[in-house]
Length: 355
Ligand code: KG4
Ligand code: ZN
Image (cartoon, rainbow, N blue to C red):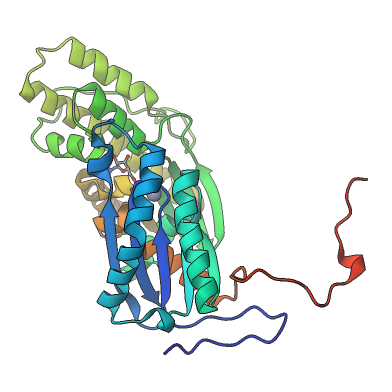
């Protein structure tokens, strides 16, 4: 049973107890249950990678349809893992954006319907906030203030985090995101989708230093990124090469080193600029082993602390959505699951239209 607080009329309900989290913004169906008092109770993920592999990228319509097929069974399995019944849930969190519209709608509709049926609050979570807070799922969670490096398929951002929902953008990508650069470069040198992790695996076998690519935008001040030129450099080197397996691995290594060193340089700059002593890594590229090793080294050298979520919580997952939702619900934030009418409604409270 939940110990859900019942709010007085007009007051937001402060939620304690297990919160279901649903992530369907792209090509993974993620479901988890997080309880602020007891931590993460269960999490499951279904990846659509094989479904999209033949097309070389995510096909939005196929993604939506597959979320429809997989979401409810995954909710049932996750609740069973946690030893909970639907009625034990104190609230339902779901990714409300950003992401693929159809894919988001599947999670939103399921979450809202479930919350409505259970008469519990529902909350739409910002996908990037989920990533930013994911390190809090681990033992020894980071205390704000910290600098977060958010590197995913859609974003390369440096963010100053001074509290939940207190985010200041320090730097952003001017073109390709870091993960996108990994994926596109992998494709150019003939690696199968999804390219990023495949390229990282190949780089493990590559020799460092045979190919040295530019560290984009590190020669001038600022915290913005630009990775689109790098893939062209790799393509030109690949076309001019013998096209052999060893060369491909060396290219992968040269590319990975360039991205990782660029990210590390900007992280150090962001820490210096804000005076923060903690760095948090989030997003799919945070699963990259060389990035983790290089930042751990920088932390040792500069005397800051670096927090990484486990690789499974760097990439998209339901746990980060359940966590972010639980924190916001605990603060009394949510939109009512039920369709509401307003028995009391001040005429003068209406918003004016036009001048
Ligand atoms: O956060 P995420 O799962 O999805 C969003 O974009 O929101 O990130 C996926 C991205 C992809 O571009 C993928 O290629 C990249 O993260 N990625 C990696 C690694 N694992 C995933 N990039 C480099 N090295 C990895 N080990
Ligand atoms: Zn993501």
